[in-house]
Amino acid sequence: MTREEKTVVISELKEQFSNSPFFYFTDSSTLSVGDVNKLRRKCFEKGITMKVVKNSLIQKALEGQSSEKGYEALFPALKGHTAIMFADVANAPAKLIAEFRGDKELPAIKAAYIDTAVYMGDSSIGALKVLKSKEELVGDIIMLLQSPAKNVIGALKYGSNTIAGLLKTLEE
Image 1 (cartoon, rainbow, N blue to C red):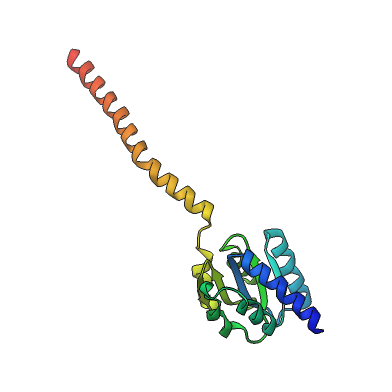
Image 2 (cartoon, rainbow, N blue to C red; image 1 turned 90 degrees about the vertical axis):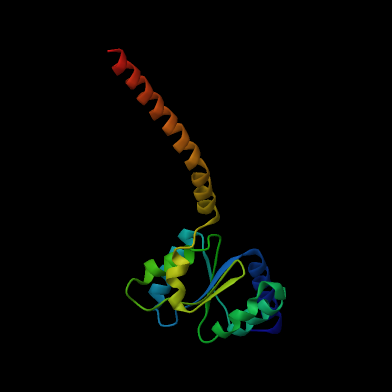
């Protein structure tokens, strides 16, 4: 790879890192070519972009970003074979990896970056799978806000039935 090609790859990665608040570093080094192709197909179906890039280029792209994002914590994960998964939904890659591998060990999560939070190691897959998307959180908040109003309305309706029933019984 020439110096110019490396520069192009680094600039593309910088742009992707700055545009994506959620990305995962994974290890799929011992998967067969057929399995890697299946994984890429599933990524495409779920709207996840998967790239395999040299660790040194990934690190240079991350170093070129703002230090406020805390990308330095990801550098220890850049050893061995690394594939990057960029996603629009924080838990999508974790769910995909868990579904794809079943009882196998790979692909494994080396690190994940979720809105300035860094998750290291494959042991964090359980926590990453249960993360809620922005839409799910907004839905939960709306449901919580509606709950007290529904309870009051239900109590008023029930109370009116009880009072009417009492009056009818007393009348008879």
